[in-house]
Length: 114
Length: 111
Picture 1 (cartoon, rainbow over the protein chains, first blue to last red):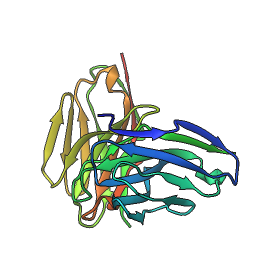
Picture 2 (tube, rainbow over the protein chains, first blue to last red; picture 1 turned 45 degrees about the vertical axis):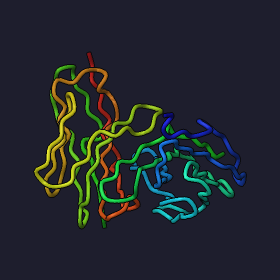
Picture 3 (cartoon, rainbow over the protein chains, first blue to last red; picture 1 turned 90 degrees about the horizontal axis):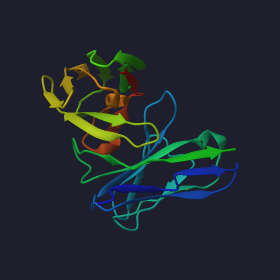
Picture 4 (cartoon, helix red, strand yellow; picture 1 turned 180 degrees about the vertical axis):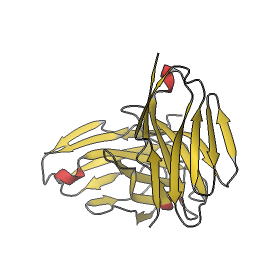
């Protein structure tokens, strides 16, 4: 199993540009989520999904959209990039969404918005 | 407000010098506390889940403990390969969207 994969590894955008960060998992996990990690701060939840066709907002959802058409894929869209979205983005998945479920993380996408 | 605080921010040890990392939390209704290891440029790697006060778990040189207000990650006789950032996260509700992460402790072990 490849686990959780993310592409691209690194991206530079100009303010106002849009892009999609890709995330895929091959573990048949129902729960998937997107986090951002900024220096000196903990991981913060952006959006999550408890199954195909079901998504919801996390702690910091503004400026991001998600959709979940298949169990395997959970892309994150930046509609109009802003410098404040410069960060490292991690996708994670778990078998379920319940208490104590272990989340498995991808390698991350480093995004720089100029 | 739910909070997770890790200390120290950074820790430098000599190889073989045992120490502990702290994760203190103020959440209502703790459902689970997680420890992850993160290497530079990589995603967090799961280490332990603790569910209730008094619980302990071990893996090689690492031992995690949990009280009602904090968790400790004890590192016994560390090696240079234990150098990483260690993240603590708490789950306050019944679902994963209630996860709160600390900022991490950056551990460096010198040979």
